[in-house]
Amino acid sequence: MGKISPVVAKYIINSSIEVDGVVDRPDVIGAIFGQTEGLLGADLELRELQRSGRIGRIEVNVETKNGKSQGEILIPSSLDKAETSIVGAALEVIQRIGPCNAKIKVNRIEDVRISKRTFIIERAKELLKNIVENVMPDSQEIADEVSYSVRVMEIQEYGKSRLPAGPSVDESDEVIVVEGRADVLNLLKHGIKNVIAINGTSIPEDIAELGKRKILTVFVDGDRGGDLIIKELMAVAEIDFVTKAPDGKEVEEITKKEIHKALRSKITVEQAKLEMSPRTEERRHDIRKPQYRAAAPSGRSGYRKVRLSEEQKTNFKDMLDGLIGTRGSYILDESLNILGKVPITEIESTLKSLTSGIYAVVFDGIIDKNLISAAERSSVKFLVAMDSKIDDSETRVNILTSADLE
Image (tube, rainbow, N blue to C red):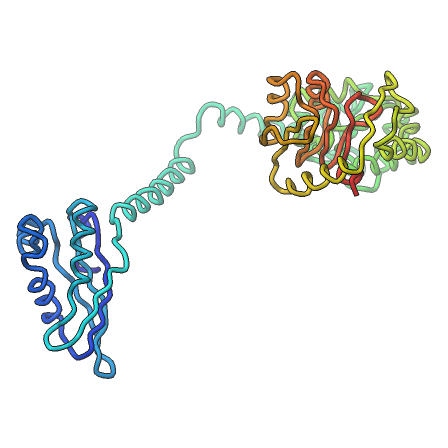
């Protein structure tokens, strides 16, 4: 294909040839022109098509082994795809080359423009990447870079342990204690400067000293690690308030709105101790465990629950297992017929648009407050998911997780 001009050709007819004897390239080309002459009419005469440039130079590559010749034939064409296909089919009528039996088979007709488009797309990606990496940044990028530099400059080292801290720790009566340097940076970014990091899992003496003189608010990540740090701080320092980032998020990544919401929702250390006590943890587990009772034993309104049959439980489990890894959801009617399947990002909007007729929603995700609110408005009876952030006593919707369906 090296001698074929990709500028002229739109298609390449790619054929294989097998000859029961020894033949050379001129023999094959002569047979092609000779045995197709007059076969396709004047408009598709190969010699005339080649003279007019509508058929390019025919390439024949053959090699001889054990007294037989085989190889390939490449014919470039600027005809339309129907005419090119006819020319390709005409090659297969050739049965002899010289004195030898021959067989020609068209393997494929390649659209040269596809490879050109592929080249264009790949090259365009390279050029775009070059633009993104090397062009002058916009005003927002400049502002962000300057702001970040200022935040880094504002970070100080506090006490003997040289803890990362904001510039207002000494002068402020209240101090926010976070986990690491990145958390300090994020709070500084949003104007909160009375912040200090413990910078590890062991609690430095400087934090204990601060607790004797200042009001300390512990602000940790919304995960199990955050709970452990709270417990350790309670044991070695005088903590006054506790708050956490939203579930599954870290302090270093949350937005300004989420930071202020978390700080407004802080609870006293006494309340935190009560919530983290073994008895409270056991009570929470017991609340989550029974999913098929007639009525919730506790909760805001003592919501009555729908009793789940074994057949429903089996159907829900099968549907949930089928959704694993798809990030999708099934919308079901009372007979557990699937009304539709939507991505989990569209469940809330779907419930808002369908205010009735939905019995259950089964999805590959986690039940949260926003989804509970939408389900209650649409009178949904069951939400079935991989996990839940909501106690079933807090809502009239029946909550089922994968663990409940085992």
